[in-house]
Image (tube, rainbow, N blue to C red):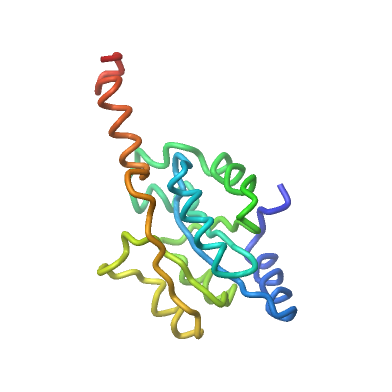
Length: 164
């Protein structure tokens, strides 16, 4: 799994890219139940530069943010799925509630979040701006969220698991 990197390795990778004049794009998230909406988002993020580094919330981080029932897909599987995507150049797993420390260590040129953050506070934004990062909100593909998928499954199979 060559795309999975420690924070130190990812910071070195980003430094090397910057030295070669390449534009580093960074985004982060849980990426639970990877779906075409995630792929569209990652493709749009990758189009903003030469390399896309994805910060992935660890299982512990995800539970602290979303509750004990999450993540649905374990961290090792989410890493494997993200690393298999051609648009993703590196994956870094993190335990913190925010990706602020990753942004500070990686020093990307561009920091990307999903359009659902428009009008909401996002803690990493200030750290990114302080480093001189361009901050971008990328719209999500309508009707393709993890919540939409879960709701469709619950409607189709019923909350008790029986097909309707």
